[in-house]
Amino acid sequence: MSIVLQVALSDAGKRLDSFLHERLPDYSRSRLQSWIKDHRALVNGSPVRASHTLRGGEHIEVSPADLPPLRAEPEELPLKVLYEDSDVIVIDKPAGMVVHAGAGHHQGTLVNALLHHFGKLSEVGGDLRPGIVHRLDKETSGVLVVARTDQAHQSLADQFQSRRIQKHYIALVHGDMVSPHGVVRSPIARDPVRRTRMTTRIETGRSAWTEYTVSEQLPRFSLLDVKIGTGRTHQIRVHLSSIRHPIVGDTLYGAPRTIAGVPAPGRFFLHAHRLSFSSPSTGNLIEVSSALSSDLSEWLNRIRANDR
Image (cartoon, rainbow, N blue to C red; front, side, top):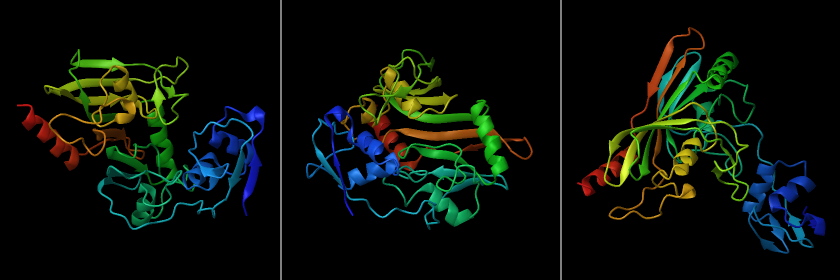
């Protein structure tokens, strides 16, 4: 059964997804956004984006879809395990895989694969995020640690919170760095205009710091070892963009869409290379690394060959 809503003049200026969330509070914003994306929310009979700005006076017809299961389900998917013990599992996440279910993503996630391969995981994160202590962006590859027990989950969460977990990434950025080493400490907040982006231009953002070291200087690019002490959304991407060195392929944060002499990479050039933490049971240091993924390694070698 469809739901028909009338937009009042006082609602002018609101985003469609925000308006629907206000008027249909029984549904989550992510679920409403997925319906908008699937053309199940029509404004004056036409599909629009979730970010569509209402003017007042419109008719909105919402056709709810059957609710997907609110529990992550096991799914037979390939999974590369770098390390495991009774407390944790460390995965080499491929680019293109979403970590857990969200708007438009209920299958093919890392969580689905983990449940198939390991069954029982920590329940602290709830039914949709079992075992998940931290995340990587969909297009970021590399090392990610998962908790098998609630006790391990709490230990890892405490280590992340107190910044005792060491996280190193490999990133290729545009341009020559002014200094071979630097730290970016700009606070990070959601961009109020482009909601898919984060920004460093709002002083009330959350504190964040990103440290980088140039590991290789190329004629048009800089290969960086990046260490982060906080885990804000898109942190490395927005911080490097803020100092005018966007990550190669990251067009959301200002990287050019084309690169002279080579095809553009299929994703942005960011790889979670190394992760070290204390064992929740013994306190011993565990360090796990992942070699640069083959797609990024091959693209980097093409750049090196072209720029000789």
